[in-house]
Length: 75
Image (cartoon, rainbow, N blue to C red; front, side, top):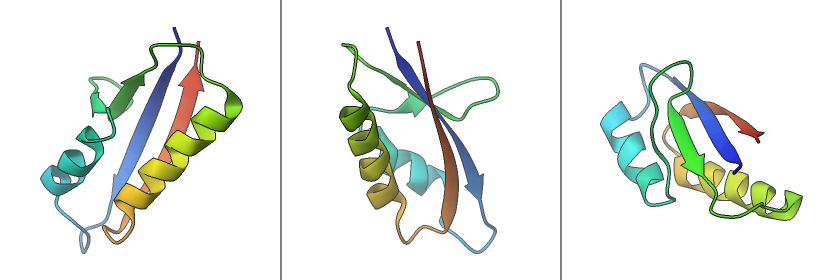
């Protein structure tokens, strides 16, 4: 099963972490313990286009919150 991990970079003049997490929960991400902040578990082997679409959705949900992110997908 593939998993996508996200590292979030918050800015002191941006949105509160609680607001950010509420937005991304709607995409199916959940909090992760360890070096990554978010985890998304795919229920199938996603195509490259599906992974890019998920990255686009995350980008859109974070727009305006002054948060940067890194996105990783692994087997």
